[in-house]
Every structure is written in C-alpha cells, then in structure tokens.
Length: 242
Image (cartoon, rainbow, N blue to C red; front, side, top):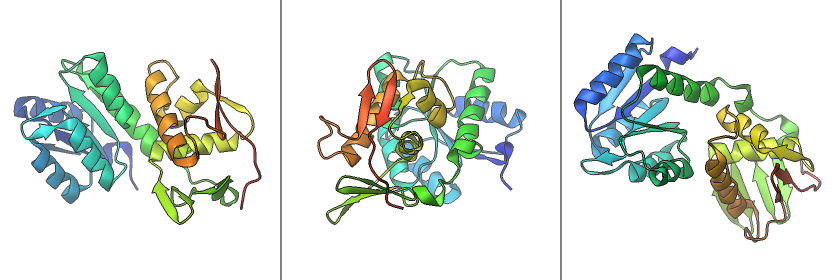
C-alpha cells in the first residue's frame, strides 16, 4: 500500500549540485526514492521509465524550458508538478500555475519549506478524501447538449469528445455536489489544492476558464458555471442523467 514516503519523486534540473542537495533533503526527510535528470530529454526518458508520483521541474533547462516540458508530461499523465526555479517574477509564477502546476517555489529556498510543499502536494493528490471516486449516481452529468462522464473524465457532444484534467474534474465534482448553490472560492480551493483561496486567485480563475471552454457552448457567456461576484461559483440547475 502506498504511503507518503514511498512516493517516487523526480527532480529535473540542470544544476547537478542543486539536484543532489534536494535529493539529500528529501531522503533525510524519509522519501525513499528520489531521482534526478539534467535536461528535458533525460527528464522525459526517466519520467516514462519510472512513472514518479511527483516531479520537481526547473523552468530553465539546457535543451528547452520547463513550461514546454510540463505540457509534454501532462499529455502523458496527470502527475503533480512543482516548479522549482530561480525565476521569481510574478508573470513566470502565474504562468506556471496557470498551466496547471501544483505549486511554484523559487530558489533559494529553505529546506523545511521544500519539505512542507512537497508533502502538501502529495497529500492532497493521493491521500485526500476529496480525490475519492464519485458515487454511481454522479457518473454522468448532462449540461445541455454536452454530457460529462465523471468516470472517464470526458465531455462529449455531437460525436466529439474532450478530456478533463484532474483539477477540472475535481472542480466540476465540487460544483455538482452543491448544484444550484454558490460554492465559495475557499471551498473550491480546499477541494482541489487543500488550501484557502488566498494565493490561488489567478490559478482558480484559469481552471474555471478552461472548464468553461469544455462544457459551455459559448464560454464567454456561460450558462452552466455562473460567477457569484465576490463569493464563488455556482453550477446552474438541470436534471442529471444517471
């Protein structure tokens, strides 16, 4: 049975000295398997071979950038990714979080800060009650012409189909659990990230926008995910298909 410290962690950073330091920090904290790769190509190879539970990813790499590698990894799996970078500009941080990253920590950092952030990401991804499978009555949800399959994490309409990311799926589940009622920003952030709204304002907005693009016929004028200004969001009511 998987526990927190059995989680396999992959560090992708071209600074070998830093990589080895992070490996030591994590291993001293109890993590048994910590891997290192120094480039995009090597990182992707190790990721495919080892299938880690968490990736610590540098933004600047010798053969590419971490943002592009992030997209390639997410094409393969919904593995949580924490950006680890010397770039501390707000635009870079928000861009990384907007892509769907689980966290962003800048160098230099305190060892305890790294340990806490890694543990928090792993706990909310693999050990949170909020990640349990939805009950059978919520397997399918009809939103106008579109049908959401919670089991498959897909949205289908008129012979087309798109996939939902893990965070989009969790947001939609939380809204559906409270259908017709306002779900506060804090409640949504706790359901997905295990943290309050503060610091996730832009990230939540980006995920809601992406979710609307998949379930709304006209995302710029949504009829299903409605904004309760200053409070949160509400999923408009309609009969569900069981």
